[in-house]
Amino acid sequence: MGLPRFTCPKGGDGESSPHLYVANCGPAVGLSYDTIASVFGTYGEVKGVCAADESGTRVIVSYHDKSSAQAAMKALNRHPCSSLGGRFLHIQYSVQSLGKVNNIDSVPVSTSASDLDIPGLYLMHDFVTAQEEQELLAAVDDRPWQHLAKRRVQHYGYEFRYDIRNVNTNHYLGELPSFVSPILERIRSFQTLDHAVDVSLDQLTVNEYPPGVGLSPHIDTHSAFEDLIFSLSLAGPCIMEFRKYATVEWQEKTTSTSDKGEQISEKNSSFVRKVIYLPPRSMLLLSGEARYVWHHYIPHHKVDKVNDSLIRRGSRRVSFTLRKNNSSSPRKTIPPFYWYGKALANANSLNTVILKGSKGEDSEPFRFFIRIL
Image 1 (cartoon, rainbow, N blue to C red):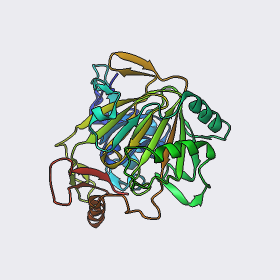
Image 2: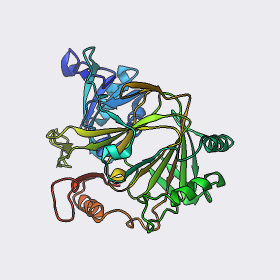
Image 3: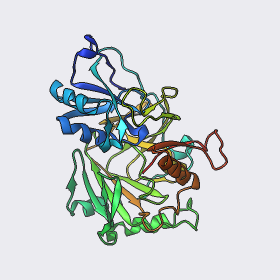
Image 4: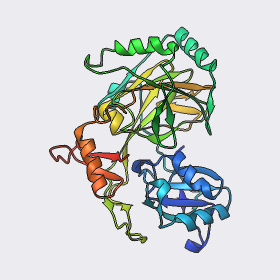
């Protein structure tokens, strides 16, 4: 396993290909693979989107035919793309190499959140019993599912809009269903939480993942939800990877369409990777740095390698993600330097910014990458 390796066509830049190498585009700049596929899908059926390297800022977009790739190249290369936040994309044709691939699956897999040493990350094993698990699955299976491209979802409290990555606060769906009441009570008594923390959660998204389907690297929208995000895993196991992308520096010339336009510096193209195993019936809590700074990602695997063992995902995995919408007090729980970074970015017409702590420290944990919303 690993990243597929792509290279320039043998005929040089003049030779087209169904595959496009796209720079200034990817999860490290706040663009999920689903969003990228949707935008490029305007020009033809997208076969897939994958990382071009480990930077998180370059992707390979693959079509079924060359004509679609040619149309996308003509429309998007070195032009600002409004559907991708006004970014200038730098696109080249690419072909898949038959050579060796980079092995990126050698990171050890932890079974305890404390082993990962990510502030604000917690994992509670056996948060529900096997009987409760079956009752929860039966409850959601009795209700209608919304079908997405590769998975099914249900929303309660507020609908989560994947097109804007936010909740529709103008459309209240009602109180959370009674079948999650025992979970909410257990969360309120969770000893790790400060008694002053508000855990009056009001939004639930249920996801059903079939075998081989995962989750693109992302950070839940900062302004949409408060600090605590709970995710209960049911029916099947998986691994979850956390990524902390390296510092990204920007050059901006918004009036130019040359290669010197808005782009990411090549100085730092790596990220820190930490992986945890999520067994069925476990509850994951993202808060603080784990919630705001680290991208979380579920690889698209049918079998996960957990150190020396191979663990099959099973026929389905169902997750219950519980959050509190942040519409009434959007600045309540986000640390001041996030809002400082947002104001700074808006002032400079950027949609990403490198943040430093309130005292200007350059060292971790005061330096962050943030998507501006």
